[in-house]
Amino acid sequence: MAQAMDRMKNEPHLVPLKLQIQGKSYKEISEELGRPETDVTNFIHRAKQRLRREIESLIREYSGGDVKTEIAALMQYL
Image (cartoon, rainbow, N blue to C red; front, top):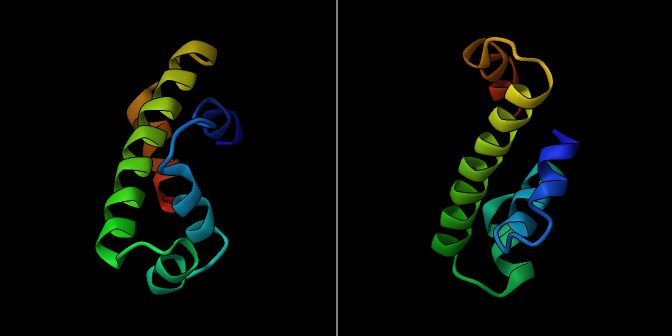
């Protein structure tokens, strides 16, 4: 997952996702970023979608394995 997030380092929606992963609530993230909570919700949703695509890409590149099985295992963290 770290490699996938590294590929997204220039993604503007990654900051709210990282804050959520650290355990902050949407309200706390909203206050910290000075953005409405609805924006934060959308940013996190978009970042998770992008992260999923990056993880799928990495799985294809490195394992040649069953992407759906690997993603199902990783989704518990997203």
